[in-house]
Image (cartoon, protein in one colour):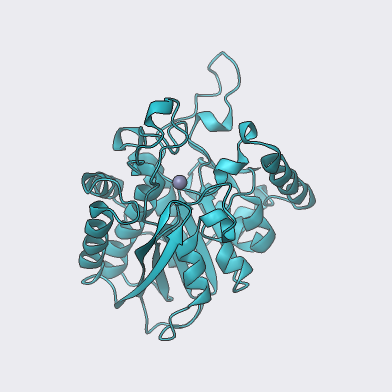
Length: 345
Ligand SMILES: [Zn+2]
């Protein structure tokens, strides 16, 4: 998942409060979408079907490989599976191998992938990415005895990859009107709040990609990162009597302030599309700023980049991040919104 968010939890400290303060300040200075008439900017077009059940099966497949943390057999198996799946679908699958040390050890062998679609088309190049590695420790698990266990990563890693692979199948059937890259970032989730590495040791793969962009393809014009997008929780209906729900208690995609600061128009357009499609998980309110794979593209390359993330589900960075805590409905909301963006809504 998302990264570093461990530092963003109140129980963790003043650092979090600092970051949160920055986030709230940013939020206070910007308007989150225009609401109402902004939907007029959405072009109603017919979209291909996003098969959320097929995507969900890819979450289960990934978990069947075991944890995909650095140096693990599951990590290698998942890499081979993704390459085998993408190669017949994409115009080109670019492999970007590198070695790096994480806050948990190494050096390890890592590989970023970029699957290229509609390579011959012209116009705005969209990159949609997700991390494919999983966290080596379940350090947020409520049971201290389990905190040295690896995270299964159904939602944290698995959900984003599952959406990307379903998009790849759709793009192979119906090529997008403009070029699209699907990026699979390695080495996102081995960070630690005490680390002095860039991004606290999170986002190693995306940071490497931003500093070592493959010369055979152009840079993207816009980047969207999907993380923790498979959450199970549904919001209680408004007419249920009881205390108001906290955003941490149900699946929701609020606006992330670093994304808003770097890519306000793109944020507005994505949330407009989601609203048009009736995908209510996309909320116009803001959440705390999050260190995730969008930041290297903003900071290193100056590309507008948006993080779409449900931060943070109760099973985040625990041993319970399993398929039974994921929901095809969440995958459908995010996947179809991405189709709307790519096909020109
Ligand atoms: Zn994570």
